Length: 74
Image 1 (cartoon, rainbow, N blue to C red):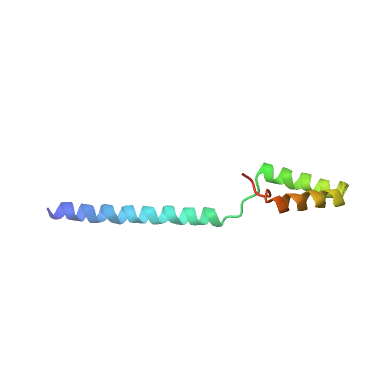
Image 2 (cartoon, rainbow, N blue to C red):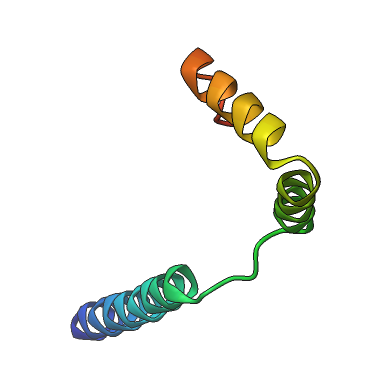
């Protein structure tokens, strides 16, 4: 019976160590700075171009959209 208790204790210790390593990897991944998606970069580029071409009209469109509350992605 002693062998079984020692085995379970060692198994639990290894299991917890593995979980802690995995949790640390997850924390590191969340902290890592990620490059914005292609969609986000393209949207930012189009937004910048719109302001470069017609700043007054672009600002009016942005303001209207903010007032309607449709600024966030669905």
